[in-house]
Image (cartoon, protein in one colour):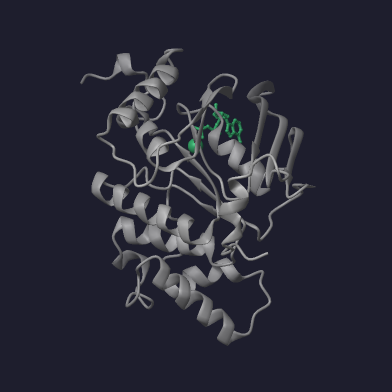
Length: 287
Ligand SMILES: Nc1ncnc2c1ncn2[C@@H]1O[C@H](COP(=O)(O)OP(=O)(O)O)[C@@H](O)[C@H]1O
Ligand SMILES: [Mg+2]
């Protein structure tokens, strides 16, 4: 099925009438660290309906990236079950597109060639391939930059290329792992709006990992709050505010307070500015 399917939004509004597109059922993940078992994820269950926008928030190390790696099929060793459209995840598949925090573009390839990499597993003629790349170059506002190389792009433009690469194969699910974390505030807000526009147009099911409570409330239909050690669901908060959401509105403020309270409740949450100083506890940072 094509991701750009207008009926997807309608389907999402009837969550009980259809089977979920993605389901995590009692998922657990244990790493072996220096011969010791380390439980990174414990008993994670979540059903995501087609067309839904889910944000996962939680402090550094609570298992957010690990969950995405499991869903995308990059790591197949886990307990419990993950299903996409009813079928257990067994490896990487074209119906799941992923965007990482660092853009991961190839420096020796142009914008168009980097986006085209998202189509390596698709059987297309050269003409079809070029048309699809062109369509997605336009979608992310990079017309005129097709032949540019990554070093000629700003951070925001590079991340747009990464988003286009994640979308070009028309996945049913877009997975984003802190995609805007390294961008300045203004660019971040611009890209958040573009992501909403893409979602509005395509109805694509979206799973966004972020440590930014405000970003989660601005974008998502539901926010999953995770707690660390072991990584597990602490709560799920429905965001019923209509779009476009006003970051300065009273309801928005109330939801942000609620989320921050849950994130800080266990004393484990580092504000985003501190999370960038990997592994350093706030009490050790002179402000
Ligand atoms: N390959 C690995 N081997 C051992 N431990 C890992 C590995 N990947 C992640 N971890 C650990 O699992 C926990 C969750 O990591 P991660 O999913 O990256 O968290 P987050 O994305 O929420 O910051 C962390 O404690 C991390 O150190
Ligand atoms: Mg991570």
